[in-house]
Length: 61
Image (cartoon, rainbow, N blue to C red; front, side, top):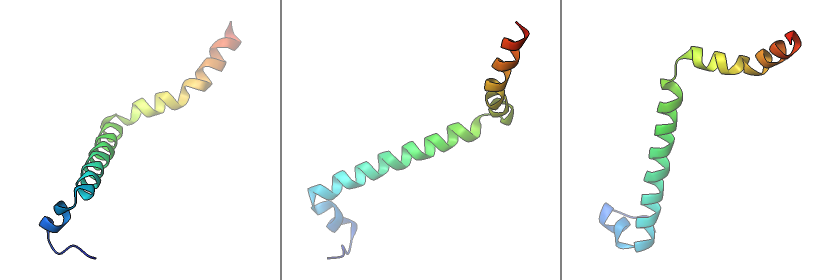
């Protein structure tokens, strides 16, 4: 059965939990995207170089 209106969707208690779960997942996904794209590119370049920097420092000691 395809629900015809928003009232039909909310009439079943189970579907309310599905809507809430979808909203939580969607908001988490959007927040994660915002967090990743808000960091400057230099931050990720520095993080990518960390394993290589440790090797160079250990060789100099």
